[in-house]
Length: 114
Image (cartoon, rainbow, N blue to C red; front, side):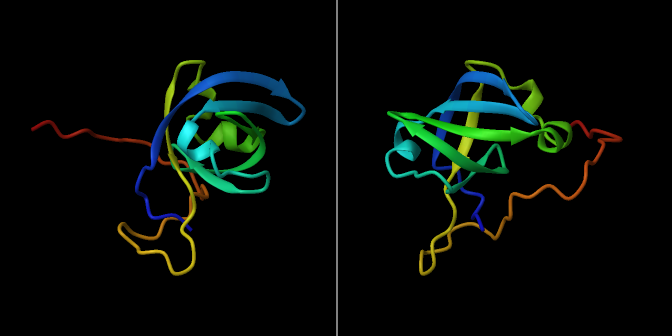
């Protein structure tokens, strides 16, 4: 579970094609400092699992379905991404409950201008 509150804006540093998707590397000193393989991190609101941490970079596997149902395929090296670590039990809740799992794809039908 996430709160929806961004902890750090990281930058995509590298994207590598991999079996069943891609490996995404994000430069994120604050988030990388205490992340471990297996941790969940919301990247632009999408729950991804840490595969590897190298210095200030965090590596994630992004599967084919995630690529099809999110904006992940538009990310390029240099793209800023919002990062949030999951809510810990007993941690103060400053936002709201967010899962980070995609249930469906919506389509914008109309945009209101003010």
